[in-house]
Image 1 (cartoon, rainbow, N blue to C red):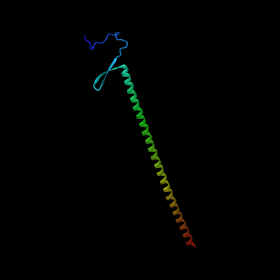
Image 2: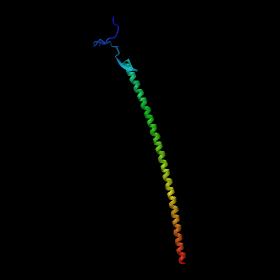
Image 3: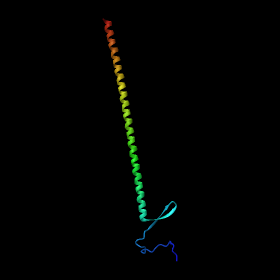
Image 4: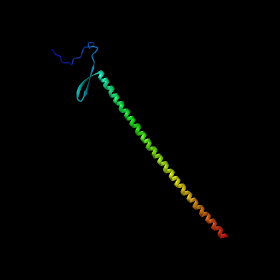
Length: 117
């Protein structure tokens, strides 16, 4: 009596209701028989792992964006401070030049008046 499996397909309608259809997957170069339920669990686990990777990737992306924004704000603040320092320096130089010109003009006026007196 032959007890091994055959390649003969069952006659439609003769498959018992509790028969679980099997799918074949390759794992580590070994053919493994997996039920639909096992396949569904495996798919769900894969999906959960993928979603977890996506969440972690999104978290890292938000952190990189936050760091970049912080760095940009720091650069902007440094530039504003540099502009303000240059503006203040220019203002002081202009005030000094104005005072020098004022003294020179007053001296010229004084000399002209003393020349005519």
